[in-house]
Amino acid sequence: MEDLCNSSMRFFSDQHLCFADIIPPSEVRARIEVAVLNFLRILTSPAPAISDLPLINRKSSNRRVSQGLLTEVSWIFLSHSFCTRSLMRANAAKAFIRVWKVMEMCFQILVQEKRVTQRELFYKLLCDSPDYFTSQLQVNRTIQDVVALLRCSRFSLGIMASSRGLVAGRLLLQEPNEEVVDCSACGSSGHAISGDLNLLEKLILKTDARYIIVVEKRLAEDRIFNQIPSILITAKGYPDIATRFLLHRLSRAFPDLPILALVDWNPAGLAILCTFKFGSIGMGLEAYRYACNVKWLGLRGNDLQLIPEQSMVPLKQRDLQIATSLMSSEFLQENYREELAVMVQLGQRVEIEALYFHGYGYLGKYIAKKIVQANYI
Image (cartoon, rainbow, N blue to C red; front, top):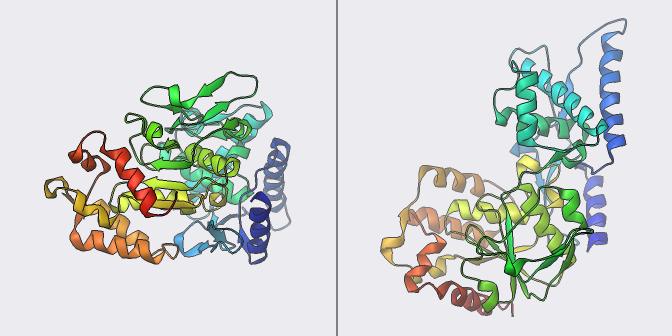
């Protein structure tokens, strides 16, 4: 599978699609140094100028989607369309300076052989450069600017993922030189997923599961993995990088296990599924590293007959905005598009918890029935 992915990447690179590399600290530092030298060279030339910073454009108009020619997995990519950060434009001057500030900070982190989370980086920048950084969102966007400038991943910059994710069920995992963790014995909340992608890559994984089930919110309270031999994984909402990375790691370690998603029947639930399945435009340069062949198990439109009318909730304005965004994306497959249209037409949303109308032990029965219906047995 890894060879096929690499072949696919080379194919799409030839079509002028670009991505961020995972590279060693020494090469990242070298790329930062080259950026500084190029800036100084132009500044001290006979016709001195302050050069713009050329960044890969991260807008949806620059998005491309591979169609899984060599594998069943499709990815979101960005093509070689550029935008710039310029000191000479009043509305972009601070963004220009932020890029240099974050590069400086990342250079220091790499020299010291440290790693920081985006939150830790925000507080460091807030103290060092309060005139330029006032919110976490500014830091997050600037990190993506640096990724787009240097073409290297966030992890290569020394920035760790903050993780909300949990994993439970029929999985034994072991960090190098540490004790084995049995994820079926970690209590109702499961085992917390580390934000250190390097550590996640080195995990020793063993399982007797037959399925990997991505759950939008709930995890181990029902101990579904005792009824259905499975690994359960959740990001507790919109998926963070570390949870997506671990799911992709599981898909590589156990390529024969189908990955099934159980999400709310609403546009946000479908958006969560699509992020696991295709990646995200916000991480277009890195998306292919986390995309997995996820199948939509439930909730589905044909499950509405199981749901009492009192459990249906009107769609919110935010739901409609998400639906519009999904409808405009070229990666949404036709059967998903049709189901999204039904959601909007009915104007209703249903949460997974509505299934408990049938009793607290019903969720496992529901999943088992859906697996049989979809012929995943």
